Image (cartoon, rainbow, N blue to C red; front, top):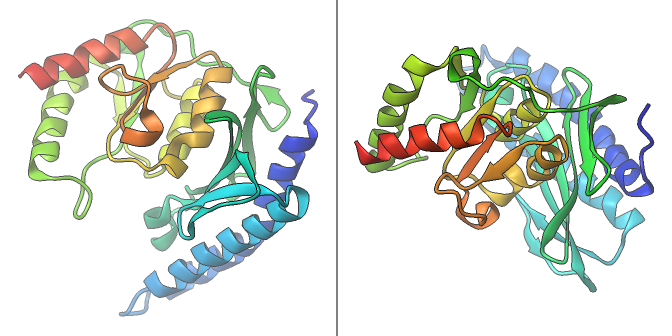
Length: 269
């Protein structure tokens, strides 16, 4: 059984407190689907309230830490070495449409390195978490990436460029990537939450994940969880500046090089 550190307990408590309101709001969103206006404004409010709750809870426990917030931006604290990176609702479009696949993501960056992270899926009550050197966990179960080594057995995840998220050039490249990868793998999934996609690779549910145009709060927690589960994560071009560029290629150790090769082939085409 996992032993949670004081740090993970602080993050866990903040996420769970925010999630209780999110779940109530999610129930309301489902009822609002019949409205012509739709629930967009309601969801924006839910997002902001969740972020406020998380920030308040973390400030109680670590009052001097800095923040990078999806909604609130950068908040400088007295402690410049430690910074929380928070996405209060990853999978907003799913939430908006009453699809129960969304999460809260909280990471701690220490001295410019991701030190700990949690990803909490309140609809399924799944808490993924990791701390540097302590392994990765799902609730009380140790996580390991899958051992599948052949593309024909692999299920991959990705994010599809859409309106307001991706230029015509980006969409054309993505279509080339699909044309190369789809015939070689067992399946490709687009579930709508990059944080959960990374957590699912860590849990062995997917063999790999790739996407561009992500923000630091989408991926920070997932990076440490995946690495502590034995996975490999880089930029798609194999660089190491994922938080800055928003380019992510994540996979188990046996599939990472193969995925990189497929994506390079698509880019050459």
